[in-house]
Image (cartoon, rainbow, N blue to C red; front, side, top):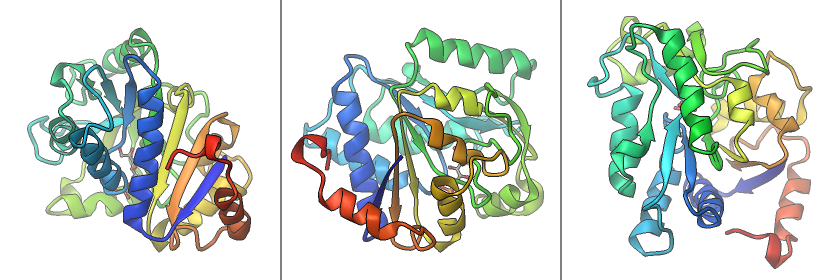
Length: 261
Ligand code: F6R
């Protein structure tokens, strides 16, 4: 795993966007994996700048979101369909027909989940998956004890995740209890993954992911088995890493051909 420690949250976004841009530039029809929540917003802002300044062309890109709430009206402002449209599709000028979000209001959720995995495969697989991390170590909505082999499916959100996401809703009761999420196996199929985290509330989950044992109790720790995983964090999110100085030294000493930002 490559670990990059940045001075602040905006730099996390800039460095992660540079990595995403590098992967996209190398693909003729890039397939992006999108996360929602607060963590990736700075990435999307920097990608928007890169597109606006002509440094990145996403005209042929398609995208797949990680997850969606079950039972929330797709038109609700906090449905991930709405959030992705508002924070990614419009600002980056992506073709809305090529931006996909799991259908959390499908009558047959299992069929919708299986169809989502098929659609990713038919698009050629995800080139670069953007990830945030939950305070409990989840990626997507793969809560602790999710199977490392899991594919897109229905999951029950933990109380901790619902409390963490309460800020997007009027009350805890309004936070959905279930979701459709790409599985850990689905996420691991992406050719590159870029995980970002900012703030002290993520420090423990980041340390357990990068330096702890690989365990279903910390779903993101499965990324230790990914061949091309980049973790970009700010100083606060890095504050519990044991080898912080080593990661800083490695990044500072990278030869030019290995750099992307
Ligand atoms: C969102 C997602 C989640 C979030 C995580 C962190 O699509 O898959 O794993 O990335 O819950 O959320 P924030 O960034 O809001 O702290």
